[in-house]
Length: 103
Image (cartoon, rainbow, N blue to C red; front, side, top):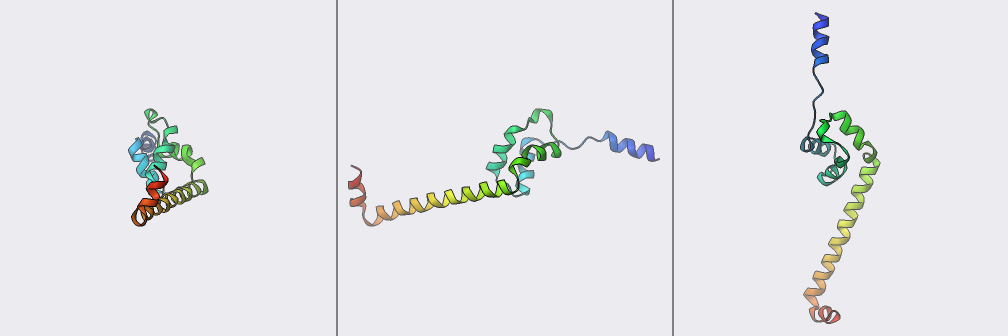
């Protein structure tokens, strides 16, 4: 009975992932969709990669590197938001000065 059990385990290949499933997998680990799409470009999905292959390919970009990159993205978004608000305030309260600066 044991050989039959081992045979059934050996015959079952590991599940493979397509690109959408891989993105969902990485999102479940805290990655943003944009980061996942960017770093999954290094994987050849025509070879039907399994989860281990995906994890090995993205491991250089995970952990502290991922956190650092995401914090930089948040900081950049904050700067853009602040600059947009400054422009809106200038436009709202002193439009004649703002538009006279750029004829």
